Length: 228
Image (tube, rainbow, N blue to C red; front, side):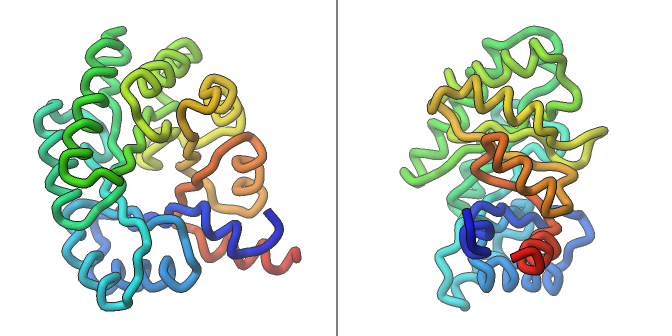
């Protein structure tokens, strides 16, 4: 990557705070559309605002809804409903939180089947739907990270994503390298959580991430622009 548009095109710009009202959401959408980000990532409750705004702007930017966010502790049936409802309301991407408690219990069959069911039901609504699974790496051991990646691949997820940004830690270069090495082209890697600077942004890309989730998108691009 050598130009700002290429950098912008890998950013999932997030606006996920519970205090983000319509004015804030539309401001973040305007930035995402203007800069050419890969995606605007929001909560399902704000989908009406986002879809209305992007349609008004004539934009086809990807819209992602974060479901079971931020803890992943709802039931599989609730996750399926939330994902399907989000797709029906205009989302073409879903960032879902893995059932970390089931993972910590070693129930990887449940984790895999839950992800697979969500992916299957999403595809019934729209066949271009993309599923990103947030595994919350800061809560997992090395062995659990490997098992989580294997479960995501087996379930047919499109991306494995490091973090919500709402837990005790965010993305690390080591975790991105681990997932990139394990993926073998079968799943893409999204780095998210605590990415605030150009150096962090570039380090994640160099480690193998193909999407970067951040709410500090403009600051990162401004910093990259000064360097160029």
